[in-house]
Length: 165
Image (cartoon, rainbow, N blue to C red; front, top):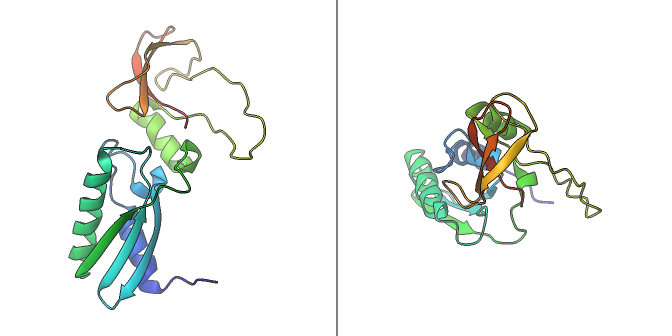
């Protein structure tokens, strides 16, 4: 069994508190992309990070921000490693992250359950402004590839929907 040292736990907390560059309302921990922090030596650390999708352009900014934060905390050698397996899923977004997305005006992804069983067929996307499920798709892509642009039929407000993956 691998145990995390107190320093690793602190560095994990610091790296996890870095805001996502595309959704700064969320931290990397809340987004679920931070996979681990491991001390390699007294002032050397490796951070494992999984992108929301292969080729995500934000991974470079995430890595640079983590490196800066951990350098500022005294780590001389910070290595951020991209890990593609297991793949990131929208189920990795924390409950707090989902709440923050909604408060920010972005409909959070619907939970998939991650059970490997049947996926519930729920097509409704709730408007983060008024709560109505009477919404329509305007574009499969929004400001980033992981979001779609929708509009609420009830209040007529457009909003982003974080797509389920």
